[in-house]
Amino acid sequence: MKYDAHPELLDRLACAYVFGTLGRLPRRRFARLAGSSEAAARALRTWEAHSAALAAAVPPVQPSPAVWAEIERRTFGTTGFDSSRRRWTDWLRPVLGFALGLLLTVGVVRQQPDWVLPSDLPAQAVLPASYIGLLLDASGKPAALASSRRHGVELSVKFLQTPVVPAGHEAVLWALPQDGAPFRLGTLRAGAKQVLTMPGTSEALLAKVSELALSFEPAGETAARPTGVFVLRGHCVKLW
Image 1 (cartoon, rainbow, N blue to C red):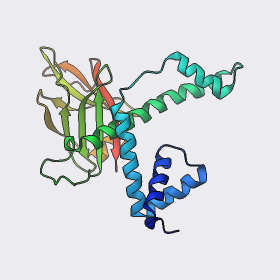
Image 2: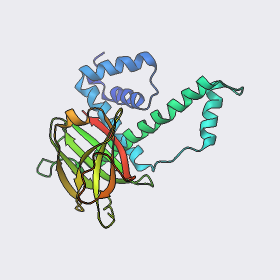
Image 3: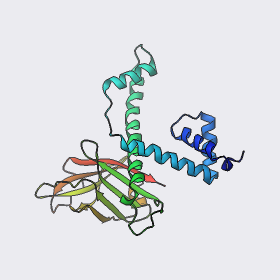
Image 4: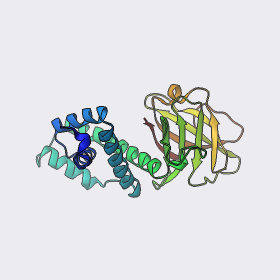
């Protein structure tokens, strides 16, 4: 079948793919199709943007213990389950948290591309291959957006909420690798949008970074590790 001649079918398949209602084999077939057909890939991008926008519009909610207990009951039955199964559910929680964080980040970028794209690009320009970090405040609201081209050395940071920096301190942005200690990316001023020049390309520095965070550090010091608590924190994702 020539799927390009059936846009309504492609739209339904893309919708089912994004929301996880396709079976295993149809899902594999559609993934291959999206890799070879521009029409299928376009339909997939459209539904990914729709789902991400929905996620961005919904404030994050911390599941109650009762929710996890019900997941465990439905997964393992009403009888008791051993510690290995508990470890499985413990593993599931951060995975779900990452997935929600990823949807939120992509959703904000899709809804507000002007926060990432340079102002001199045309309105129809697509987002170039980039690393994007969405930092949230303690209540889970977006507070800062960081972005850098995949092979660039400049990191653009836009505050969505202006941080109140204590006297004698400065706001410092940190990269949090999946495995390893946090490392400093630079000091941020009070302005709404600014650019940090990093010591290497984003690909070299951020490829294994899962989160970005901001802390208030004593002014004039260049500590290699954060000494204060993270006042903002969020996922760092690849968009390409």
